[in-house]
Length: 170
Image (cartoon, rainbow, N blue to C red; front, side, top):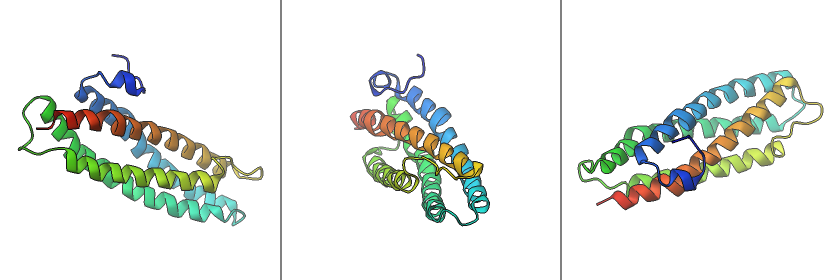
């Protein structure tokens, strides 16, 4: 099956394949991009010389988002994904249901989406000011990529993976 990002096509793929895709594509990208935007934020703040006060607030939102996403991804990788794989194999996972982890993770998704909204507001939809430094522009480009990927990532989990996993639960 060709890797695709539509809910309709992933809705018929084996859940293990979807999890593999989420890990290889979205989890990997998120981890790399979070480190990249952290570096770019520091460089943008230094290069800017205090001309754009919003960079300090962007840094604060990114610090929070980065910390939360690292914990979130670990919970998915260590708790939810193994549970779903076991359910798909028909073995269950010590009689556990994915309902509680999914509920918690979807609340975290909502908060991540809220923080993305804040970043969009602070950056005027990732449009760098006309007098922005190259570092500032690179930061906004990286943020736009992170935003787009997280939107797709969260859609695949909330709209495809989680409902299908709940259907497998005992």
